[in-house]
Amino acid sequence: METKLERIADKSRNEKRPIFTSLYHLINEELLKQCHKELDGNKAEGIDNVSKKEYAENLDENIKDLVIRLKNKAYKPAPALRVYIPKDNGKMRPLGISIYEDKIVQLALKKILEAIYEPKFQDNMYGFRANNSCHKAIKYVHKSISTTRINYIVDADIKGFFDHIDHDWMIRFIEYNIKDPNIIGLIKKYLKAGIMDKGQYVATEEGSAQGNIISPVLANIYVHFVLVLWYKEIIEKRAEGENFLVVYADDFIAGFQYQREAQAYYEALKKRVSKFGLELESSKSKIIKFGKFAEQNRKALGQGKPETFDFLGFTFYCSRTRQGKPCIKVKTSKKKFKQKVKAMKVWLYENRDIRVRELMEKLRIKLLGHYRYYGISHNSNMIGTFRHRTIEYLFKVLNRRSNRKSYSWEGFNEMLKHHKLPYPKIYFSLFD
Image 1 (cartoon, rainbow, N blue to C red):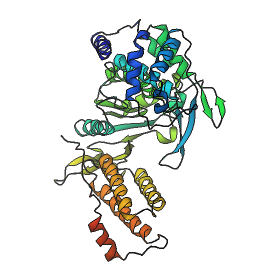
Image 2: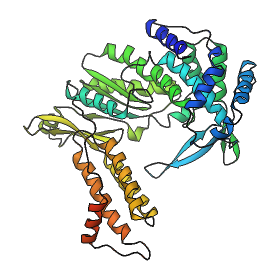
Image 3: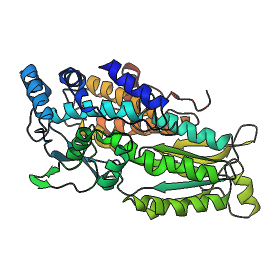
């Protein structure tokens, strides 16, 4: 099966507009069993409450029955279970949890779509892609500004991207390369499967539920056609000055050398996304003067310090090297820092009654997770401050445990010598 997917990828890579007319037969017992093997059995269950373990009890029969229903076009995805998880800002993020059998088919379909579209996606797309990451996207932005004559940043935000993907446009984009009506029909079924929210069925006339296995690749296809190709074929070719675009799912940053081109792009962008059922969040979208020369340019005009912008949890700001040369640096954004500190405080209080050894081991893992994401060049102070704030809350929490001996600072520090917490470390360099 891997060889067949590799041949599809080769065709997509080597042809300007590859057309695929026969793909549905690839969703066979072999691929479906492979997908079952790869799926995480600890993930949340859908509306039927069937787990991977339960489905595997009669795996051969279940897969054979599934293949028959797929061949006969009798397969119909179940509505996704709507669940809500807290976001860092205190709001709730809606997710859609598919039943286990639907997850198997979605993963098979995802493999086929990725084989076709991954070779076509541009290098400046970083979200939900193998061998790409948030850190690589941040590095791309940093390098694009630091090594060019970028003077203006367009920082735009799409309002509710996943919830407002237009189904008709989604299908039209996919039909550009896929002419297999059965694959198209299967994608339509997923888009229209609906949601079960608090026991009530809700039809899905637009959007693709976050949490579904198929949603990330569908979102990337949408962004590829709506934003990335348009930028490459229209904006980039018409620009006289230097420019760049970096995309991570629905988060993106564009940079321009000339103000008129930044403004023209921003106005065109609003019309562009509107055409495809989307809308910019005006309160979060802006054009700012930014770049290596922003500080001296603003100072000459009496405009004060350069503005900053946030991307993927980091703030980009203008600074200077130790030698006094202008440079671009990044740090944990104030918003994310406050959210992470608050979340750590809540977690410590929720776990204050467990044994110290267990608490400290879990805390060690949480700190390492924070360092691995925010441990990026220039950000030592912020991750150091996060560790310091965590230790302050830990001291307070351990002294508020019921019927437990309180710690003095001396005793607390002795405990830290025994249960050592990791120190901050830079895990990702912007310069290598």
